Image (tube, rainbow, N blue to C red; front, side, top):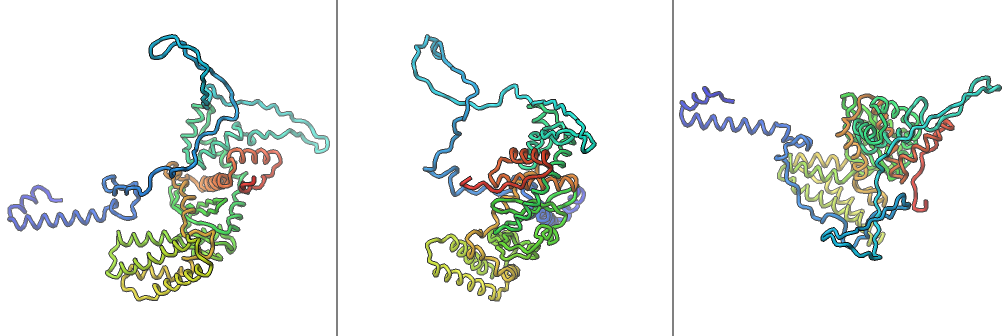
Length: 460
């Protein structure tokens, strides 16, 4: 930046010197703005000023359900705990005595009682002598973990609030301390969650085994901080399970921890290179990610004059494939003919000599994954995008903004285990709190954890 003395010295040199200095300053400012983090395409949205963000596009569809949809309302309560009658003696408008009629209406209100209190139970445990074992024995208390003053339901509920809903530790403590009230501490909760993780570890391993046996499995990953260091949160999701894994590595060694053997199903993922190391029967690459790459090139790169022709042909090919996958009015022969035509068009696109550098870059990708772009046309249960994987990892991304990830490796493992279990139970239609509490009681009683329950079907 110029000082006052430098500016006056330039002014004394004449008009040409002033114009030259202004042009140089303008050029410097423009270069600084281009190098600014706020103008980088990789800058997160939260770090950009509000005035630099583009205005939201107008919605093409109206909000809410379509006209004629069935109504949605709360069902009447199954039981009535208290009944109250309301009747006026005088008109609230003029004060005249009202005349009684036989007209009534009923209104149901569900609320939490004002005197809601925690239940404290004193357990008297008798320790008796076994003449055969030659030692003292006593019954097992199944209402809480050994040497724990918090009951199973409090333990499971707090873990569900934190690892399934994303409430912070301080929020959970405030809710319990002020509204129940049960006095909780951060250290006590973290220790109990760690113990709960050790008990539910077999369920976590069962989810991984069932994920390896899924017919269709979605995979995605995102950054995660552990003790201030960058780790990666891996997510593997099917229709009835979700498995989270936090690892220091973003490459194939982390994937091999999940895929312990050759995957016999179809793996759906984006174009991240680490997934190429996974041995699997079939793969489907996310076509939406491919279309986003075209948009990125046009917005942030400098494609050549041959780019529009390449982009138009490739986009038309992808959209034709997606439309063909949605057609159900074609005969088997006609569908197969159009399917073969897509392969021919893709091969012609790959074999064409493209001079644009961005086109050549994407042609390499198409050539490498030539047999993994249209798998969804050969398998009805395989989608053309990785939407399910991205939706499965999104709750964890929201938690990352609230809790700032984990402070230790043990905490990261607890996070992965409990997130996986609660998410899977929800997918399978089970009450997460009731199911985990029941399994915990059975474990304390017998020393064995029951298998993870399967998905609830329409027939029960």
